[in-house]
Image (tube, one colour):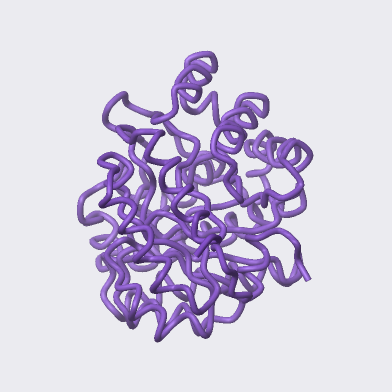
Length: 347
C-alpha cells in the first residue's frame, strides 16, 4: 500500500485528516514566484527552463508543506508543440495562431515531434522527482482535448467558447480531426511525464461546462477516456484525477463511472453533500474551497474549510480549491487554510 497521503487517498482510503494541495499553488500570489519569473524573463521562458520551473514548483512546498507538488507548466504547451504560434499578452493572457480550416489542420506537425519542444518539461519532472521531500507526491498534468481545442480554434480564451462550438457545428470534420490530434499528443505527453517521474496525472477540462449533454459525452468524456486508456496501457495503473469544471451532476456521475479515474476534482459550485452521497463510493473527491477565501480569509475561511471536510469525511478526500488560486490571494490565508485542515487531527 502507498505511504504518501495523496496516494493513500487515491487508492480509496479514508484518512482522518485529508491531504492538501492547491491548484496554481506556484503562482503570482507568492513574492518568491514573482522574483523567479522576473529572472526567467517571461512566462514561457519560465515554463521551458528546467531550472526555473523546478524552483517555482518547489517554492510552495518549502513555504507551506503541501502534500503534493504539481508540475509548473501550461496547458497550451501542447498547441505550441504541435506547431502553433503561442505568446502571452501582459494583462490579457495567451494568444495563439488558429485552426479554422482543413489547410490549417494539415499544417500541424507530426505527433511524435512534440517531444522536441516538450523535452525541457520532462527534464523538469525528472528534477522534481529527485528534489521533492519523500512524503510529497509529484503530479503531472495536461489540458483535456476540448479545453485545449477551444484555445486552438479561437486563438485565445473566450467567455463562451463560441468559436469552438461554431466550428464543431459548421465543419465537424476539421473539429474532430483537431480533437484526434490533441488526444494523440496529450496521451504521449502524459506518458512521458510519468516515465520522467510523475506519480499522479491530472486532466483539466476547464470549459467542460459549456458543452451540451450530448457534446459533453462526445467531446469531454470520450476523449478523456481514450487518453486514460492509452496512459494505463503504457504505464500501468497510475492514479488519474479528472476536473470536468462546470459539468452538471450527470456529467460528474459519468466521469465517476469511467474506467481508470481515481479522483474527481470538484468546482466550488458543486454541492459536497450531493457529491459525498453520489460519487465518493466510486472515486476519491478533491476540493472544493472557493478561491475567494484565499483573498478574504477570516472566520469565513475557517468555517468553509471545516464544512467541506465534514461533508467529505466519510470517504477518500484530498483538500483543494474549487479552481486555481488568484494573484490577489494572501499567503497568510493559504497558511490558515492548511492549519485548519491539519488541526482536524486534534478533533
